[in-house]
Length: 427
Image 1 (cartoon, rainbow, N blue to C red):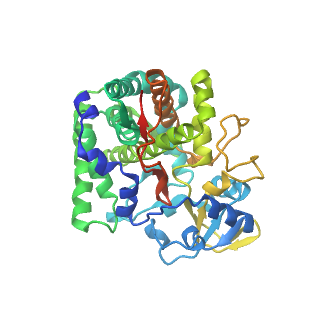
Image 2 (image 1 turned 90 degrees about the vertical axis):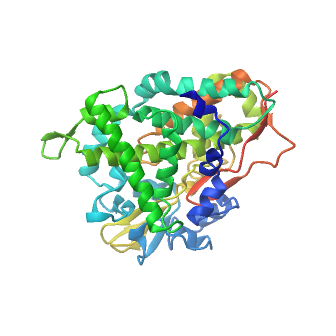
Image 3 (image 1 turned 180 degrees about the horizontal axis):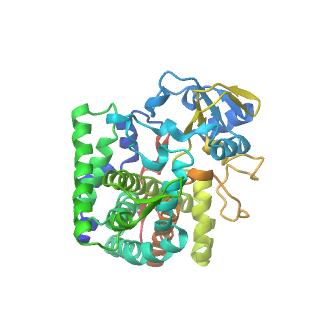
């Protein structure tokens, strides 16, 4: 099972190149957009226009439902916090990509209350913090990280984005679902292709989606016959409590949709945020030394990286009724983009917000979202990065950026940021 984990396979480069990923999605933005987003925040808390429009970037529409609608963007902490928490005025239905029969494909991401709460309550027990500190670490994360870091010990140099950051999340989530060996990369490749709207043919996307569904349906059948200690078994055994109080098991289709979402999110956002965390520490040597001396600071380093440069700095909501936000009238049917990247650097909430400073007093940020839709897997991501950072510092106390390689930089889509690479010297 560990052979594929440490394999020198070119598919890792294909799947985990942040810049190439954005090129394929058609939303590549090379420069650091934080200064421009900050400037927009200082101009007004809510403004008419999609974020890309306001930043003078080429149009890229991620959500089918947003086509032809008016766009608005919120920038300040207060405005974004309100939009995240007020699900009655700002609906998550914008996430819906119409499919055959208008069925939901992204599960809880496209649900509003009370439907969302029912499904969230059913899923949440598998992702709460105590579970990630025990079951997730003991069953998957610790072994995966140990194998990868041990493999690096024979090298003097490494590229951590591909050799560590990319591999920990994808193998953690596929093993947790119940897949083994090569299935991790086969599944990841198919799920990425199935989501590449407009960049590959409809036939290719459909074939990839069918591969995803087939692999999950096969796994569900195996777990019905022989339950295991994994997420699929948990979904098979779970009861969904509906708003009227009645309970029922999930249908096969519901299990597929929820497993698909867990796999898509778990193999993507954690990888990019892991790289951003390492980059932050490696370019702030005083704070890296502080973490090396006091490992209780690792968690603070992670939280500060998510505040400072969240991998997903903008989310969308559908305006459900005529309303206003921070004095700006928003018509029903418009799209509100929540620029949490700007909100996370709001000087009204943080002192010197553009600086990476893990010594800040603890204070909530929006890097994992906010409100009812706060990231379901955030504690898994935190555990993956926590274990990974500690293992690196234990094995390579002289870890530093490789001066002979191009300096890492933030790249990718405006909607999914990550590192160009993390080239390091290990000795």
